[in-house]
Length: 421
Image: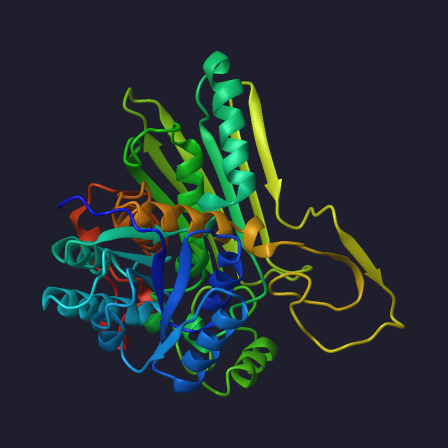
């Protein structure tokens, strides 16, 4: 790939205008050398609203485009952020590949939200299309860029590892009471259930914490995976009815195959010298607390690291005499408006979106390949598929198994596909 000139400002086009796009916009307030120049969503009202919001936040002016092709061909964007639902991402990348291949536009880079795809085959095709189009590519896993993760990893590897030895166990958990949009609950569209939706975060942030600073992202070799999935809450009649009502009838777990709402996974990796290290991850859509909870641990021979997103320094207490409408103004996936409530004073920063967008903006602006790329997105999907296959077949799965390349989780398969061999 020929050297790219350094740009004074990276002009970003947002593909998608849903919940996650709002998080990105909020975080971009803290990023220099960036302009949100374009927005595309198939829904006119959503793209117009997001473009207007970008302008109101001082990130624009942003133009709302009526097609992805028009946004790329305009020459007004240098990089695209793919923020669309999981089942649309491969088609979105195919369209990017087609338009860039026709020689139109000034696109140099593409970044994609997690997970990269629904299957290993889809993920590998995302990577192939980006590379064939000659684009820099970045995998948007925000938890790697959480200020707690970056600072904690730096301290552990600088102060503890040189005298005590490398860390050998990373634990990661992410839990909340359930997703916002109906497509998250639909296995064919989302690619699975909570394991696909949230463990994509957990396994990758754990792999990052276990990887030595400056080492290649594939310096830890994936060895085996053992997974468990379950339906604990949302198949109960009361909650299935609640979910059907909440989604306007689009999700009915009494009639359709339900996506799992609990998942647990253990992934074994090996260092270059053969030492075994492990990831232990837990995710749930059946957690009812103040809101979204992220818990991280890193353990080594003589040290440990701990982080909990809900162990905030800022809290408020609201008595039963204080009433108000439901919202998420204190914490994402908020479950109450009264009592002792934690407040995340900077959710976008604490979750990692600000530093993530700062990093990818600077990397793409300078024409450099980021350390977290679509290749890492492929590895994440490999871990997810191994865990799903392990849960389905009730055995430990080795990553050397060729069948992982074509495996589709049971909840994402068509009803007539049955069990996988």
